[in-house]
Length: 215
Image (cartoon, rainbow, N blue to C red; front, side, top):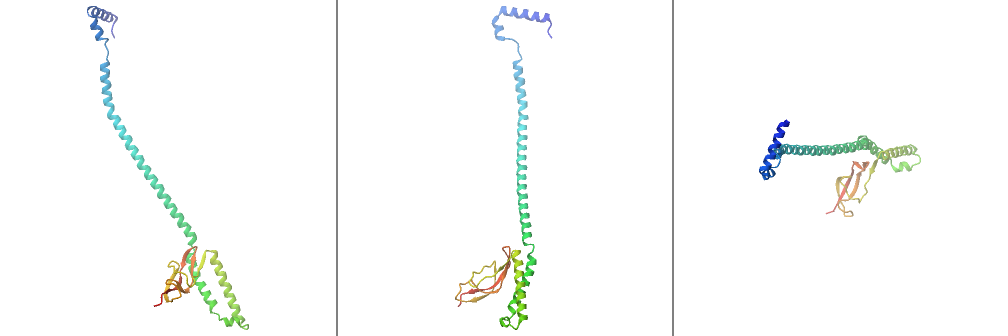
């Protein structure tokens, strides 16, 4: 810190110089550290530039990492939703078609019942003295009717194509060909055995004979 004596001496020198050459004093101006400050500021700016650049690169890397994790998260959500949909569909199918194997066994019973119904001669039914055959026939018919009511209750439907219907490989099984001119080729000419559908899905295709053009 300058003492009062030094300050007085500096002021006296300044006044002496001003008297000798006032222009010199005006041009020189007061003593400042502006140049030094500018130099120091320039140095600071030069030193801060690499730090700012490194920060921007770090932010860019973080944004890229965030975008990558966001994309993976969205893909995981989509995959999880797909798995959930597939499981829901499998559960619904299990509920609908869980009795499929049991129905296949009952279909065989229904075939036997139908054979029993058709095996009784019509003349025996018309004969009033054959009450045993008539009672047996009525009992078999009632059993067959109740069995098909149970089928309907659980979504098991008969697949009974008629002669002249178009052959469908999804619903029909071709056993043989019938040369016939009265039907279009590829039509059903004979039904060997009826089929069944379980809730719209073919459980057993109907066995049929398919018409072809007679040579």
